[in-house]
Image 1 (tube, rainbow, N blue to C red):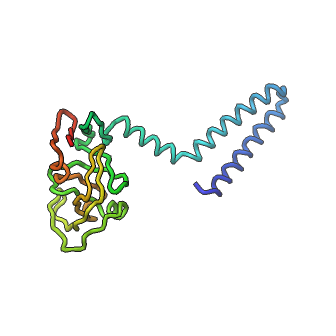
Image 2 (tube, rainbow, N blue to C red):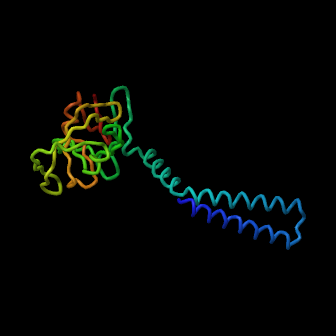
Length: 199
């Protein structure tokens, strides 16, 4: 929120408090009782002001708490093993990082190579190789992709360096963790509603 909007909200709050104070004076309420009521109103309006001013932060925090509670994409570390809960859409999503930047991946054993969107590539500093594009088959049809390499890919405690990726705007905003990651593990399996990754 801009400083101008905050100033306007503050002026509005002061005006409301002055209105409440004048109403208390007109009703000739005893000073002690009036001060208590006035202090109560100040606290109420201050709380409303804080919530209104920081509403975007509270919404972001709420979304994060819901995701943490549901555990859809937060890997659980058990020794060296990672366990990822199946999401309500039936897929396995996991929060990882590319070159130190947070990235959410869809784990897809049907994808040969880990694939990222153009926006993700730009955000994480991954440059396409610039060579001839590769045609790959996706669930949405055949698309053209560029090869690239991530300096560092991290999922939970599992880390890979100089890691091959495909880059294309054709992926939309979905980033896919493919078989070139899964095959680098000592093992992986689906057990009940969990994807288990063994480094």
